[in-house]
Length: 130
Image 1: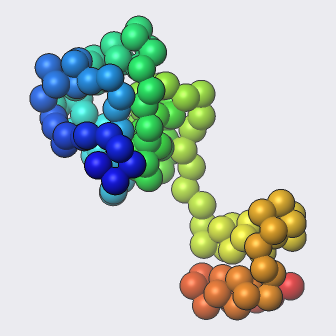
Image 2: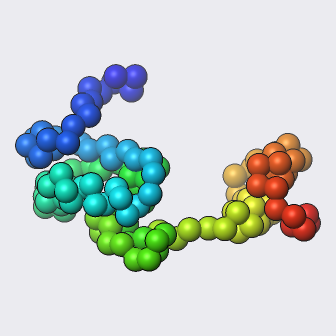
């Protein structure tokens, strides 16, 4: 409603098939989420709407990951395959190093001094000071 659209939370295949747009939210792990989509029988409806009818699909958080081809989070699990990417788990050290990467600060024009301290406190990666 806030952005001018009505929405409805549903697991009903028929409601998904009648949707003009789909938002796929999610919190949790890739494997159980894909299993739930299969168990609920909504995979085919999502495929029909996204691939055949080409309606807009917005993935948020885990929902964005599920749009990919597969995840290697816990082995290898197939995703919805709507995007040609795989989902990988990052170590906290990798995340910290990427955030500390100077190019991110320059590309996004983030205030370096302010965010460096925050990153160190959040990830607390020993020996990663630059």
